Length: 182
Length: 433
Image 1 (spheres, rainbow over the protein chains, first blue to last red):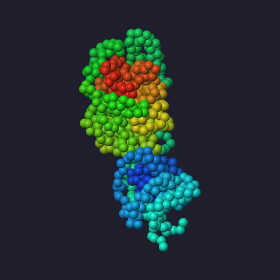
Image 2 (image 1 turned 60 degrees about the vertical axis):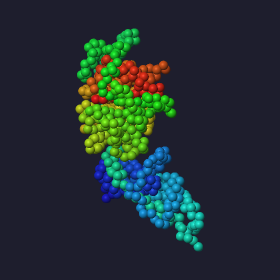
Image 3 (image 1 turned 45 degrees about the horizontal axis):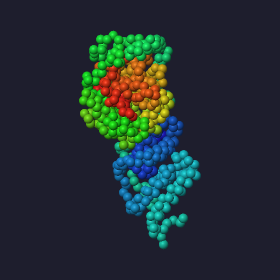
Image 4 (image 1 turned 180 degrees about the vertical axis):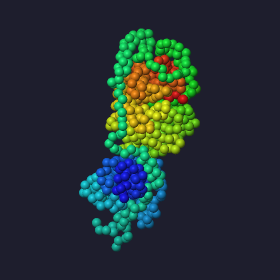
């Protein structure tokens, strides 16, 4: 069904593409939010990715590849948005429209703050790999395809991001010891 | 003994928190923007090339211009008179009779009587550079490309509004009660605003990063044509917004088919069926208020109903500021238009028929930014040469002339000083209908 929608959208059918937005929009937003950690910028990135997808869709040869292709556009849009935000750092930020989900009691306010800061210190490229693997659950080979780098680079980025986040959390817990052996 | 702290679980839990649903407002904006984003396909549709280069009337007119230039040069420099420019044109408008109309020959510039004292209505001025009130004497990064709008009437000159300074590309509504213009929003995207009775509101409703520029009211005032683009997503093209419903109709054939190009300053024909615009190629797209030097530009006409684009080759490499004669019979335009505000050499005003024939040069002394007075004359910005030979924009202020180029006269003696600063000048003017 999705392939048929993609094919119709390739022919210029706006309603078919609207259905694709309904199918993919939430997932795209969830990914973009987790990479950018900002609702408004995530909306901008999703918008940019989806409109670019609409414009370039006639050039997509294999409709079955739509999802990977869209995720690649989305990740690139997140990179753009992250860099744009550096240039225009003074912006009014809105609160999430649907609000955050209920906080998990296993993560304290302090922990969230530590993780937020540590995560934002990672490059957008490291963040993207981390989110695609740990939140979306994509296999490493697919991530390599989405972000357009060799699988070895994906592993390296994943390792670097995981190590930094873990170190930040541990450093903030002076009495804690790691549950897993190094 | 270990406690229950597991950093990996904590990171995974934290990562899954947060919103995962695309807000409805964002979805609606995206869906609405699809309609404004043409898909990239091979070819842009039917484009017709209308050339004046093989046009016999142009050859004749050119020969006449050259001949008359040679014959009239001595008269011009010795007697201060203005030489004729080609064969006497057929009148295309019926301007309000004035005393000077009785004269058979053009009024010499030196004897022209300023008519600023008889000014009625209001003139909207687009200004580039340091503020006219002297509040910004030394621009921090010259050349200063800050744009402001001013309103001028018999009572004097006042700024359209004090903030923000990046305002450009204005247009009066046909009833003279509303003004559309462009401005930058908080994200530095260019948006279209409409001012009614001193209150401005944003007309642009598309996405945050969508840009809209160069608004122009349709003859009946119910629609505006404008240029729409989104960096990295959609090439610039002209679209039409219905002011009552907000519905936007894109004209994708107006996007560039010659590489990086930008349709600028669309202007409706008086019957509302066609739009003339300039397709401009610049070194790069700048941010709002920052225009990059023009590489080349050409005039085009799009048929609103069919989207068919006609290219007008007038034999010049930089043209713009085009608008229709009030009766729709001809198009007036400028070469090397001032709104580019790059390093200019010479620039003058011309007219041509919509089919590309009968090109006529209307000025020879440095002129640009033609627009229309309520009585069918041409209002323009006159420029003069500086000491080093480079023209200084706007130093001779605003002038008016008949639609055939005759009876050119300054609008007011004091205007050159009033409308120019050391680092700025009025680059276009629009008389209230």
